[in-house]
Image (cartoon, rainbow, N blue to C red; front, side):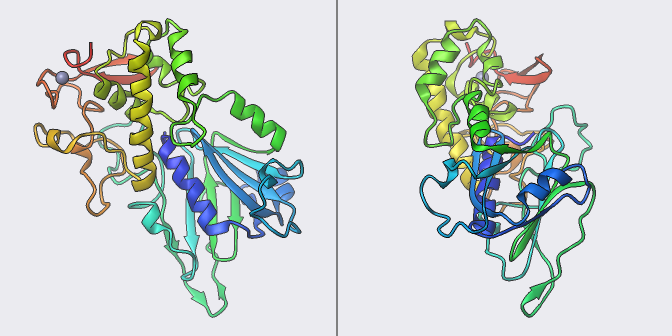
Length: 340
Ligand SMILES: [Zn+2]
């Protein structure tokens, strides 16, 4: 499942490709026909991510200045809320004159972040990000490609088309309903309004393990299995310790680290948590479905993490074998020596 940094990159992509444009919205598959009809012909005025939720704001087409502050809270703005879940993907194609976004998106083709249950034989080229596939054009028009697969919703703008397949959530909601969704989410370390105190207080109120709480989107939004494992390692915190027993200064330090790591991920399209001096000490398996491979100059996936998917391999810092345990259906990776 893509972690929050990927969803933030998607939000930026939609902003670059479509901001201010009147979009044609359809549901080639048909399952979202009613929602698409409501949005069709509206103008995209906002593209926001909160954790793993993507919100695209559509105002009436006759809105003149799409940059007006407050438009995103206007009662007649409607929102397309999507969540990719385990299988969802956005696929983009664009005319040759589409705005250049590849630099902001990272390597190979589309989709999926990481999923622990995948066999090691899964294609290692699967990545969590997207790229614009150029299509041919003739003078002032371009040939929009046919939808491929079960496309729930298609957004067609002046220079690009975006197709959503396999989402967990895809619905039209009001501004009020959007605020209700956001109220149920924990703070997002990538967002400027992410509130560290809310995170620290929430973790400290519960006897649930901190390893489990970090995966709870109501505690902190956007953290997935990689950031969970890596942030706890970097903080030296035992993931199985109850939240209320972890010193609040340590919880705050985890937040501050997530802000740095996740914003870096959103910027570069790859999760890298290792410090340069720790990368060469032990090999990895290269079986992580993560998107560092292929991006020029990127840290290779087998050097990018301290513990994630390195179970049985020596800890990069102390040499002890990295441990793995299933916790609430997801594999948790940690070092029993460094994290106490
Ligand atoms: Zn260690």
